[in-house]
Amino acid sequence: MPTHLITGAGAGIGAAVAARLHARGDDLILLARDAARARQLVERYPGARTLVGDLADPDRLSWAFDKQTLPDRLDSLLHIAGIVDLGPVGELRPKTWHQQLNVNLIAPAEVTRLLLPTLRASKATVVFVNSGAGLNAHADWSAYAASKHGLKALADALRAEERPNGIRVTSVYPGRTATAMQAKVHSQEGKEYDPSAWIDPESVATTILMALDLPRDAEVNDLTVRPGR
Image (cartoon, rainbow, N blue to C red; front, side):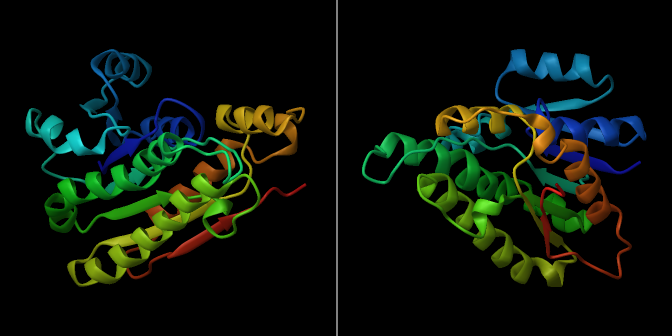
């Protein structure tokens, strides 16, 4: 069975992807921020393995991984975890910038670096779940959009560098999706949140699985998903 390492499997799009892959019998390795979260994920996905590392502190990921057994095979690495905090440029403090850049950009780069030998050996697929904000920035979205614009650059560079090694790289750009993150965004925007108005996480999961399951003679580089209503 294929083996997938997933960040953000505890909620939203990540949970939808993990549940779909678990249901079809694939092997899962779920990145958890701490041991307690790892236990919760194993209870939710019986048979899954975990890897503990805090994406909010990418400088310590190498230290954390060195103390654990890393997988000897990975068919995919799915970067789905992310955080958002809105605000105008004139009010955002460095802490807010650092938090979003760490989780949304620097940690995915570091996790990829640490696992790259295994990804190369398996000719794996790397999926970066980006955002519509990774293509267009709007007022109050500067820090989040900057992290996601950077994530696009990371994916594009990785694709060019690793294509000779057989690694496929896909970026997925969902529009507003009905997740807890979206509820937070609406709260920060001062708007009423109606999940039925936005993309179901299952629809984004279907898009991600399509990229994973594509035959090896093809690669999807960029997928944009928008609300259909």
